[in-house]
Image (tube, rainbow, N blue to C red; front, side, top):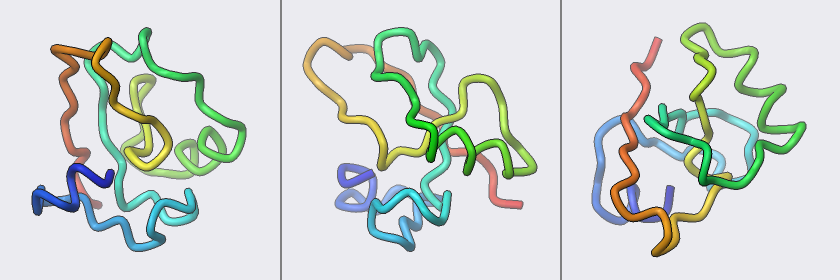
Length: 79
């Protein structure tokens, strides 16, 4: 989320500043298997979103690390 907001990526509003309360940084991860597990809070918030998918994540809830090279992240459409 920080990388997206620092680079003015459209669709990443991050209204809550990373507190996992707004879902305005909702993204789709092409291959989420290498990321940390979703917390219960993240899972509950995502399940309330109309355009939720199995590969949905909140960008504020995972850290991109060197071992994630090639990670493809798509911004979810705002509804």
